[in-house]
Amino acid sequence: MRPNSNIMIELPASPEAFRDAAWDDILPYYEQLASIHLEATTPVVESWLSTWSRLDTLVGEAGTLAMIAYTGNTADTAAETAYLRFSMEIFPKLEEQGVRLAKRLLDLGWSRDDLETTIRRFRTDIEIFREANVARFSQIEELSAGYQKITGGLSVDWDGTPKTIPQLQPYLKSADRAERERAFRLGAEAYMVKRDEFADLFDNMYVLRDAVAKEAGFADYQRYCFAAKHRFDYTPEDTARFHDAVKQMVTPAVARLMEHRRESLGVAVLRPWDVTVDLNADEPLKPFADVETFIDRASNIFQRVDPELGGQFRIMADEKLLDLESRPGKAPGGYCTDLSFRGRPFIFMNAVGVPDDVQTLVHEAGHCFHDFATHSLPFTWQRRTGHEAAELASMSMELLAMPYFVAPDGYYTPDEARVAWLEHLEDVLGSLVHIASVDAFQAWIYTDPAGANRDARDAKWLELRKEFESGVDWTGLERERVGRWYRQLHIFELPFYYIEYGLAQLGALQVFRNAVADAGDAVAAYKRFLKLGGTRPLPELYAAAGVKLVFDAETMAELVAFAEERIAALRAGADAPFRGVVPV
Image (cartoon, rainbow, N blue to C red):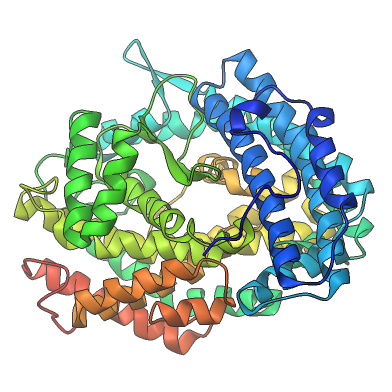
């Protein structure tokens, strides 16, 4: 049962009250929470926490709505102003107030079992907080908005028609190799034309982040991020083991996939524009032609996975909490965010009618199901998980949903579905290589003084990609290969948010393996994991889903072998990804 809320101070009825607010309009509410008399008795503390939690969700949802409006149209100056007010002025100071109130709680010495992880996070936030860093975070947010503005404005000319970069994706699946190459080069060049602007932004971000770490007493920004991201259960040394295990176990597996692709395409060497074209389809798969169909079939798929989850997705569709199509001025990429006050998630993406759109929607829906499952927890901090758990929710859903992609419920004929299944399982292995190289790149940037140099960064990116990637010929394409890291918004906006994808992908493969044995049990464990939110330590959350954290080469090898078995089964004609294992 939720504690009674709003018994100590009067709060606004909805986030609308804070839509146009400046920090001076919000601060008095936090001042009241900071000054009100507290006793270390459970009813009093729970009531105070409930009021604080409700206030955070009111302000948080107002800021989230501003972000949604801006990313939906980066050319809207009013939306940009509102977004920057929250990201630069309000949220950095909100963090400061959070630390202030957390100190009050810790000073009371009060706790309860389902708040132990929250209190541990609070304690870390207090330890690393420095008032001097508040202004730095504000500056970083302004630079991040600048990155979004540049990328949101990128377009290319395609036969006289302007295309956004996401709108080039269908051409990368064309059976015409020359057309694929043209689309690849245009997309890469759009970023490299802006290389100096991106490098200027990153130079400034680097200086600020290094100063943040030093101010907080850390040797480097990587160590600072591990604390700030509450990575209590693994270390930078563990991630280095992860990198090595990927190079040892996954890179050779991806090389085998690329050799199969090269032979299937009948080309002498595989080039970057050859890696996404469908091998077993005469024409590129077109899962949907309009957004309405896209949404309706996704709803059917989730209903087949689990009726409760299907109903939740239908709520989102009915309440128009899906912004899915690509359009000029829209920020690139995709995300799920939560409207924390009303207890609803929101999906943003750039769909253009390709299979990757299906995977993106299913991925983001996994985050949504996590949000739905945790909203009943009493306090907002309990509903938040680390990214390692959040991405386990999304990546597991990608695999749990796969068997239901076949029409009439899903998007494909049986033969088309097999092509889509193969593509996704191959992408799972390929993504581990990309994830490890991105994380290794960031580790180098923030622990080696050369990371401050833009040319050294480009050179290191090339070096790392050559270590991790195998089977694709990049001869003469060094400039285009460098451009790949400028497209990775996490490196700019969310530094060190990437290893989580790798840990979660290996967890999701374990969920998938469990589903091959018993899909019903796997979904039930998945839902039990979702409901825990952030109330338990990370290893316990993974255990609830029936999986474990993986950093070692031996376990990674087992999961790679399992994925390759499924790929071999589908190549041999298996009619579903959960059946018909064929030994490699």
